[in-house]
Image 1 (cartoon, rainbow, N blue to C red):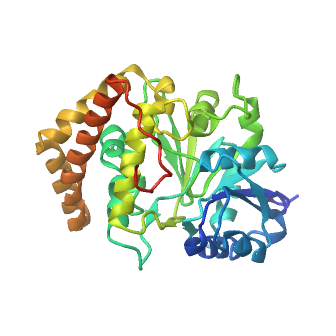
Image 2 (cartoon, rainbow, N blue to C red):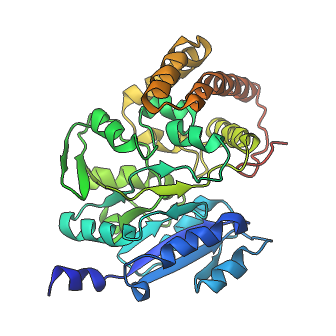
Length: 353
């Protein structure tokens, strides 16, 4: 059987959690329907958290299978999607993400077949032409704490060079890079989103990894790397990301991340806290340096200048005030926790009570 025949015989499930996603869902689904990979081999699972807008109607229009996520949060939705899928390969695409390259899925399946890696990632984020300016900052830095800890920019023009500087053990051809991590590496911040793909067969082989456990989702990448420490990044397959509708929405997301990590460490999707048990001890120590990094202002200013010079984007200077704000939020909620006060966890991207 030829390589082309092998590729065309593989079923792929795309898992997409949704909640009132009508503004971006159609673009996301249209990018899947435009893929050059055989459409009859692509199964789209919409795992909905109780949308009250036209999300489910749009999903039906595109022939998606719709599942219900009674726990609302998208990490639970991704878990439901994994358990419902019968395909070996799974792609995770959020409802605010669009595949730019029509060969995206084909290239990724090709990478799986040829390299047998357990985890595969896209080649960075692009800002939608009509999106607010804050989306440019998000692509460059993600958030101040994440950039401080991982030192990798998700921006399409910077992502692969950032990874190459951070993790020098890699091989490369015209289509992709394969990174091989050592036990001493702090693993990059990768999640089940942005067109990420996993080999579900390898997921089930990982010792001690139970796909019914709710905290499996935020630690999936780390668990797979323990079994096989190789990551493939496919070139020229960026994801257009509608991350935040407004600057205010982004601030609400920052607040949510701080509250979740400090007050709700046991729930899935809290980022650094969920992954902390799988990180090296130096990562636990480094996190405490974020406060002086942000409050002394100079280190964050240096990062902003370097990024602005590298990209010629003045938006990079937002790293200075946003780092300061994030540090204040961390200190404030750490104080609340020490006093036994636990604020309610709002919906992600929504105003805190």
